[in-house]
Image 1: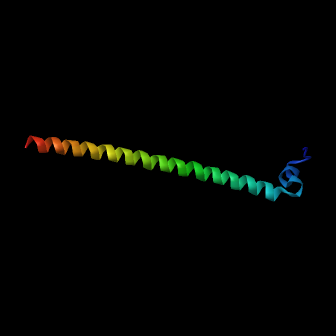
Image 2 (image 1 turned 90 degrees about the vertical axis):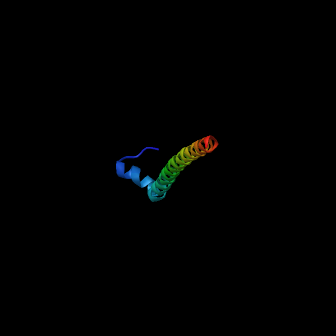
Image 3 (image 1 turned 180 degrees about the vertical axis):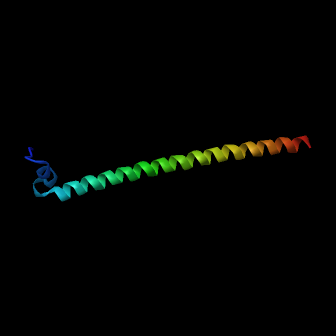
Length: 68
């Protein structure tokens, strides 16, 4: 499709608001999914780190208990 001017491109033959709203909603949804995934990854990594530290503390406590 060929447009004579940039304003014609933005208007999209009268369908511009629908087209640009669809692009905006899609872009916002993709950003939300990306940030949600990154946040979940960060929380999961912290949980794993805490679990490893807890298991190490338990092992250390068991060693200490066996030496007493």
